[in-house]
Length: 247
Length: 247
DNA sequence: CCAAAAGTGTTGTTAGTACACCCATGG
DNA sequence: CCATGGGTGTACTAACAACACTTTTGG
Image (cartoon, rainbow over all chains, first blue to last red; front, side):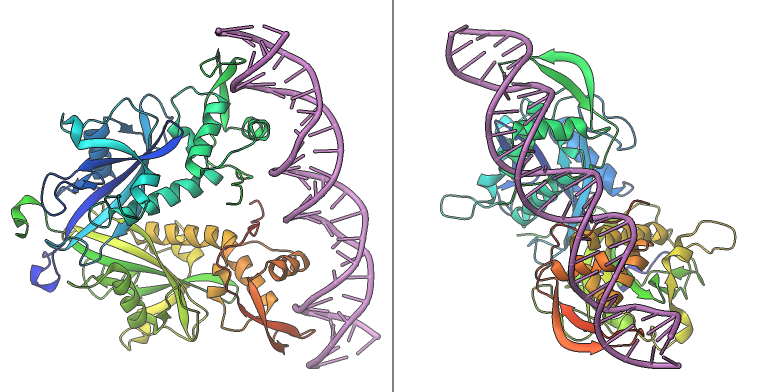
């Protein structure tokens, strides 16, 4: 089979951009890196990079995730162990004017990670940080908007995460391997920006088969009565879903 | 700003592929076209084509939709009038080996259309048809698989449609501008492959504010007692959702 | 003892399922 | 008259919201 004549279609650059979310100090945060090059030099942007010539889109996203955070994205088919993060394709952004230099199509991915000590980006501590999504998405005077169309991409990723923890067990991706029901509840509260009833939440998550499995231990790291420790169970879908309170 | 040096990143071709779904004779059907060129010559494939140099991804998908079906995708912001179809981005497929000729990244889109008289594809009546998705996705002896990774793309589109009609008013995109509750119920039954209780379905859809608005007329096109005609209302999200029966 | 967080019991309400029943038309 | 699909009423039940109450730790 002969290759296409390149004159019959326009060439594109293809990148992956990452919306990496975590929960820190009761707030939903995203990983952003400072741009060292023009355009948007000095502005914050989502981590990302070019897809290589013989690389799948998901592999490129996983590679970028490791480079930026050291996190290993785990295959959803295998059990989640160690520093595994959830990684899925989000959407693709291809406005002809989104990059002033040339035609770039970006396949955005969404990653959910437990709280990490500190981001690393090429050893430069000042060039990457976790920022509350509330600050990054706030319109207004003092806020510096993200580079390119990354505010839009981030908003789409946050919206996806907010809706997906309703009907899936994905919220456990924000937790360490062992966690308490209270810690899981604080994840929901941070992602949704609401306050949930601890009693009803406890009944709901422990009563859904396959969502949580007791790991045997207990902890008192929050003070008060010791809490049971759990691991994420095999269930991936929550039925009936976790109900998000109105507004 | 200088353009990128093309040697710093690999060039890609970017295409849009369409999963166009409709309901015909109580079955969920997809639009497929016969390939006239190598590779996969003579095999059925999803309609699609290259994204042009100065074209947005959504515009490219809308253009392909018009070319293949004559359907006009309507902006979700505007009211749905005439032969409008729902169109949304589905996912992006970029396996390095998905096209044997060169590196092609395809941004798949999902379109939902009312039952149309007959597909047209460049005037050639034999080169495009509506096929039941059940047949297209059946593995096995007599079935001819779709070209490229289009079986996977179609499966993802069908799955998206099946889950999205649960919590949105999208099922009306499969109906003509005016329709009865019974016709809408047959859409759900065809897409989900289940049988629903007509009485409870009627109560559910007419009781959800903004889902359906009576258009005043009645019809007897199904025989039996005349049924009220409705149009799709302004509501886009169904809360509580339509419940899909187990298995 | 008290504060704090974990966990259980109970009650009222919402929304679903199942199904009996009536309505309006064509043949 | 009867078949066919449209539409309403009603009992039963699952699951959620609200909140009183008990349990187990640290200070």
